[in-house]
Image (tube, rainbow over all chains, first blue to last red):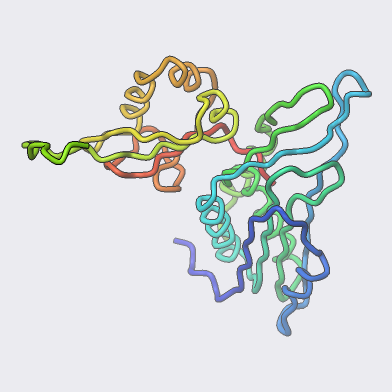
Length: 164
Length: 96
């Protein structure tokens, strides 16, 4: 049985509005933490077969209630496996244009190894276990993004590894 | 509803809420429906019942991989659904 996680701060928000990396960084700082890792995911440029047919925006849909619940469960796993003191997960929903920030995962810990690992675990599970879907709006048409097997493999890796 | 309705001998079915998301929502043409449910049943049976309601839903459920949640927890189709539960059906997730 995994041990109960030590007390840690969790900030979890699902919102359309953009977020400030600086503000979220400040919210993670703690006197007993020597490391903060921030990951931000962005809407990247994409093209169809016709190079003029570029991505205009991603539309993100989620399942209110279950999204927050699933993120909280993932944070709990990260805090059980790694020695972390604060976790922030912010995920934007709605219509986001190319270059926009989509997601922020921030972790504060005493030393860097726990913060790096926890941040990666949270992102890997976020891609697989949280009810959020992306629809890609190109000039010509819109299509739902397919789940990637590489993302499934990334999450499965954490399940195979032994809990320290 | 008539105010003169006779009392029913059997328990009235309770509405189980079914939610659809993303591509599945578009295929079904609705984000939410209520399914009258009398007794606990396994999710696989509930999906069969749901598919019998409309050819639209039947096609939407067979055309793609469908993930299932009961009361906001991911479950497999052997899970039990109580009358009044919240059931959600959706494609594999693509957040992050």
